[in-house]
Image 1 (cartoon, rainbow, N blue to C red):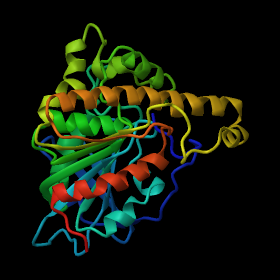
Image 2: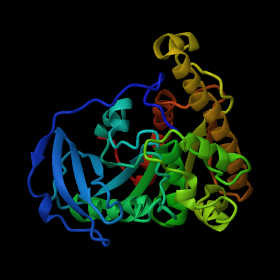
Image 3: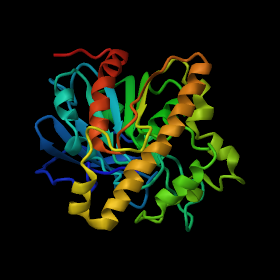
Image 4: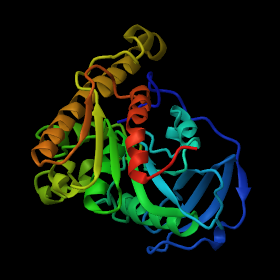
Length: 343
């Protein structure tokens, strides 16, 4: 559930790109995934196109923000910050277009990696894709992308991750399911208690409008019959695995508009009645329910004695304005965990 702007309808801009040769010689991942194309978007920004058996129906993209002095032949590696978008658009460009992340990254000696996440794809290896086949986003993110970056783009072994909405859920889930993969994880408006009563239904309703026909049943199975699988992907139940991982989580909790939101009158004028209603349901009701799950997760993580920085900021909708603010707050903790230095 993400919107691309406070009004939920700003399209991602196209960017001038220049083809870079040499991608065909990149070392593959253990699954056989390969970088098949590179495009230089601008100075210190590189897009990769990947052919992978994990996502065989498309060629997912990854955007890199490169640190100063970076080259494929450098005599050193760099700490890596992985950054996930949400399920509303699944686009690897979202963080670049909708936030000032590129400016923050440019000031630090860190490699930033933003992989495609799929539309309403759930940041998981799907249990029962419609019609069979393979939809393995978790494998793509945690094996393919990590190994390709490490083997071909001078990515080091010190890694942190942050994400918005379903990407925030994915970030925490990955950190818990793949111990040692990330030093620090930050989740902004991510569902962190998937199996809390009522939440599977909310997730099902959120997927109803998906252009891909995605559903929680395809991703994790039936919430009752396949409860064991749901639990193995639920951050709340995976919480003990996060001991030793730095944590920052944030969300709105009231479902009401906050200081960074457009007024309802402006939304109504620009989007009409149907658009304004959708804005309120997704941005307001959705964020309030996310807040319920984050409160539950924070209570559990603290009961376990695991340190966690939490910002439950009350009013504020489910949109980029708050996520941009929240990553600013989490940034120093992410960089400290990575051992990254400011230029």
